[in-house]
Amino acid sequence: MMSPLLLPVLAWVAGLGLGLFYFGGLWLTIRRLPTCRRPAPMLIGSYVGRTALVLVGFYFVMGDRWERIAACVLGFMVARQILIARLRPDPTPDAPRGNEEG
Image (cartoon, rainbow, N blue to C red; front, side, top):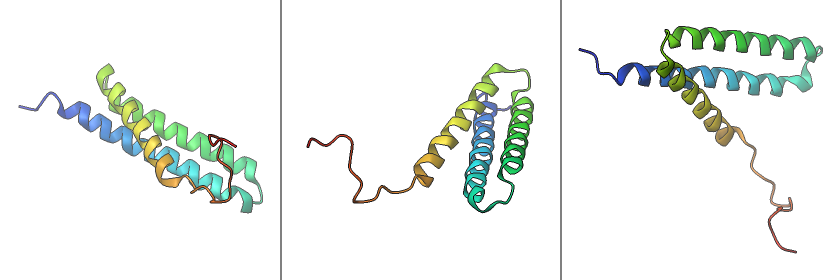
């Protein structure tokens, strides 16, 4: 017998993978924009491709169960937060901070 938590956990892991693909692809696309000769088609193509694959992934993970899509979307959002934390540039030491008193 399968554990009732197994499918939601697998859906969460699938969402994590879809999020890493989507936001990692976005990051790679943005990094290539300055050197690309035709940035608009690359940006649009990347968006359409990433979005289509993620939507198809959500559809297959869901399997007519709202619990699975909720877990998948949660994993997707966690992947976004992980990549933001990992890929955010370090602030420069000379940059003024907004919350310091003058």
